Image (cartoon, rainbow, N blue to C red; front, side, top):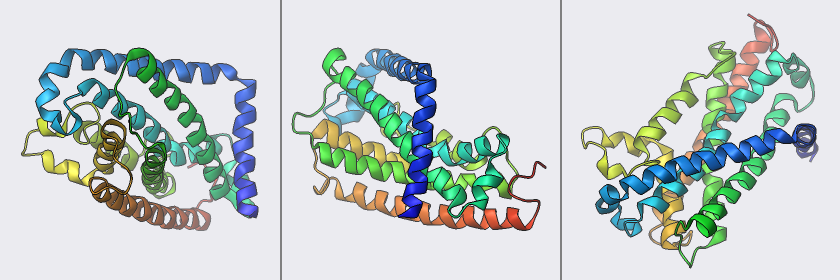
Length: 277
């Protein structure tokens, strides 16, 4: 209970910060709308070429791309969150202070996770509703909102787990700024091989196997099945996606917790958590 209270205190701190700088929220909304509009524009030109590869989604390439981009953007923010949290606290000279508290750095990271999830959920939901009701992007009339949210949470937790793995490099590799290799490589592979912007079927068969190792592949296919085909979370079509994403989410989070804890211990026994080297 105390850990939850500590985490929520950091969530509240992020909210207070936004109240002082509301323009950040406005700019984030504009950025999301511009990104969606850009890919919507691209999809309108390419839709005739991608129809044959989208038989599972009734050949609707515009909806395919918009839904993929919206959910990919949100997951990307979660992916980089742990490392960015450590980096921000480190350069603000607050990391050592957080680590000295009872729940320390973990409460800080989890608190920012709660905030980032809520923040991006509101923005991306607004973008998606605009795309559906104003632009005319098609989704299933039988969509299960609960199924969509629960499956999206599996995607979020997987991204967070990979982010924790990457955040361990803040101490293990002494990567203090920029982008560390784990989340950077995950992001690159996801953009190329997971079908965010185009069907996986168009990827050359010689390298298509890479998509099977990228969790975004299953996450985006699953969320599209729910939103475009009206599949429920426990339908025969969705069960493979749900099972795989559960394995990814649990596995990456457990591994991420272990690696980051080991990295924190290594830093404490070495130069220290807040030591600039």
